[in-house]
Image (tube, rainbow, N blue to C red; front, side):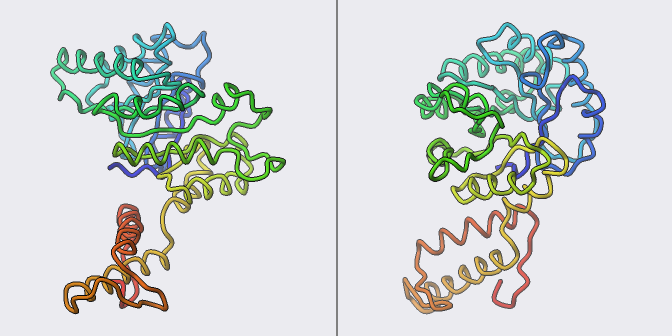
Length: 309
């Protein structure tokens, strides 16, 4: 799977932001044709700016374009123009406000036709699927299973709050008046569905870009649910989100040590469970440690302790 701790959103109608985004150390950058672009700018001129940007060099290893929703008049033109112009430089198409499997099928079939026509590898362009409505939440399993191209399920807190009637005006914020975490249900559903279908789970934006403490709190909560990454709306959020969605060195070293201790217990001593650092570790412990170790390795970490293997 691609590393997607930080997913930077860039308005497709801003040449300045498109140019700067090329140099930023996000794991993924998505060039937006949807909510970040005014209706008057949803034109071939803006699409061409995205095509030109995709053809350039990027620090981010993964490049994505968010098109307008399938139910809009712009979706077909967005996809066909961008893929015809820069399909070989495009990793994924992001579909907003996915209503049900039919939205996914439409984009999947359109991409296949374009890939065949352009002699691109069929199926190489992946899909990122945004869950932003109550209906999308109810249909999440069929959405996740609708295409082999699917790579992520993404929470869209702004449109989701609007659709459900949540009395809130800051996208992605936590209202302290709620007795708990008001996004727990939807994020937990996204994580469970993503894991069931082999996808990554991505948290959406936090609009108060100067409130790094609030951003970090929301990110930590979704990370503790198992989410793989989060959107960044500003360069200042990238380093923070990369840190939160990676294990720290101590946690990574401990995971490596658990794996080594369990290997010795099972392969050399014939034991299915063993005491380690005052805890009983067994097969379930190994599986948990593998997840932390894999996350760290993906982020470029190496064990530092003698027991880290």
